[in-house]
Image (cartoon, rainbow, N blue to C red; front, side, top):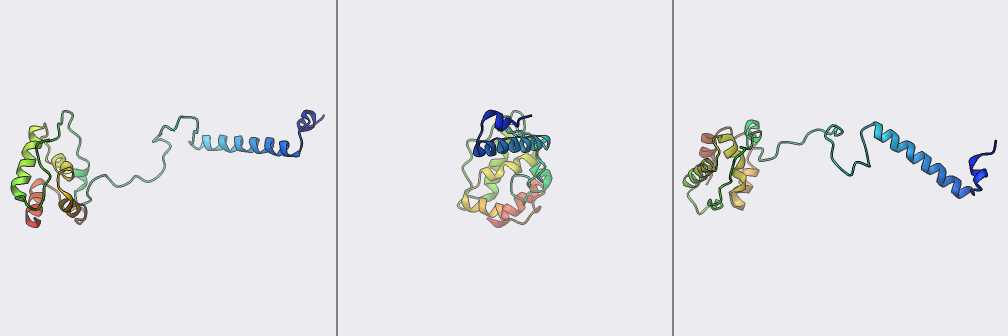
Length: 150
């Protein structure tokens, strides 16, 4: 029996290329069996991801129950609240923010706290991002810490 490369008249370079393609196909099959599927169009499949989960999004100063607060289905973010700056009364600004969130359809203080980082100006936001982990556990706790700092 004549080998395929001799039958087809392939030279050494062509044979090497053919062997490399076969090897690559074998690796692709092995990767596919492990969960990698290059022909899925780049879609993410969480069933394939074996990496550890990242921390929850949001300031780590918030307790986990706050970072896990569920987004209300009919929530409308406040549009009439100015960004907080140190020139404002912090207690009055927090009350206005809380009332605006409630008017927007939120009745969960944990979500109101979780949404807070969208509203302070630069210095207040930086302060919140660098606050020690798990220190803010409730609205009363946040208000005490926020007003005490600003």
